[in-house]
Length: 130
Image (cartoon, rainbow, N blue to C red; front, side, top):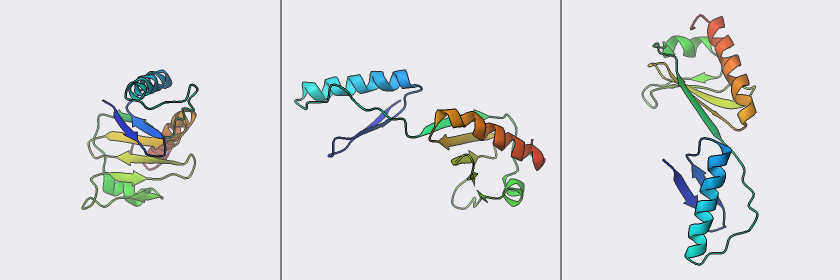
């Protein structure tokens, strides 16, 4: 599933590709379709990955209230959002925890995903949540 946003300034944003190769393929398809309807596109495009979403399921329930009181940089308000929002400083990321055990990590660089997951795992072990 892909969502594409075409802006009037010529920028194109999309979500959905699982890797950079899929992003290049999608970009080529978008350009071909734009060319067909009369919009010229650049021969060489500057493709940048700006956000990466990684998700997992640890297959166990999480006590979000306990996590929120033990983790600094954590926000938990179940009346407004069902998950705990954790914003560690290093690396700069946002990690969402759900009581079902699902975890979603939003980060800007793919090389930082493993660092973020390792630090998050260490932090959760240190407070007795894993």
